[in-house]
Image (tube, rainbow, N blue to C red; front, side, top):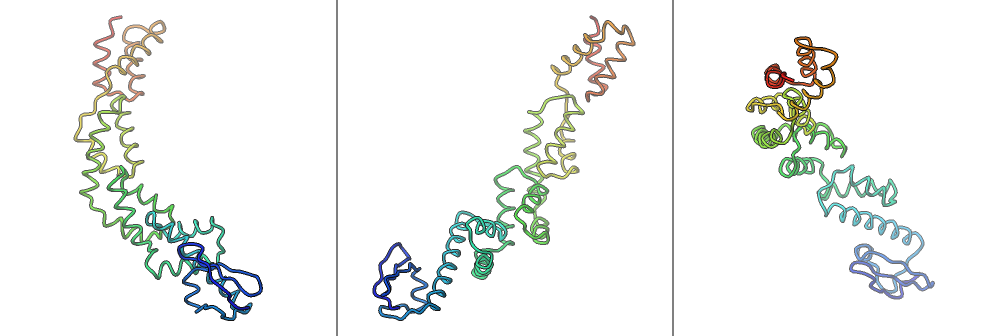
Length: 258
């Protein structure tokens, strides 16, 4: 088979017309690398090789376009190529070249990922680690990068978040503290650091909720108990709801005159 003519079909592709009335579309790089000129003989063996080369360039370009949006982990890129229907053999060779060319690097990806999460999200170190594990980054790399996180930056970030949440979250003193600790632990901050920040605040029960809880308990049990027994029963119920002794003493003193 001889090449009769070329026709450009896109920015980097050409359609090659052969003298057996067949045609093949190839990337420009494949054409140049194989010195495909007019009248060049193309046997079946070379044709098969050209198709393989072209498929490789195609897979490589698909991966590059995917990576160009943002940095990707090796695992992410593999999964994307699988979804695109590319064969495992071709994926492995594509990944190797992407790593060799510097487009895929899990250490660089992890550093960028950690920096982004610390800068633009509320996440703390532990949650960032958990997120990285989803990208199948080696734990040794994750530990290496996260161990370099500046604790002062994390503490300052947590301090601002605590200041905001203390004003927002409502409830009894003890329940409020538990809610805040759980909230920030879920965000990835250490319990010790959270408690240290919370110690800067005097957490107070929501007075309106305390009054509502008191009234609810009083109205439910006023006909069953009376006097000091009713007072004791109300106190125990309020205690189980997370109110402090001070809260309970105050609300009973202010309201036990029904």
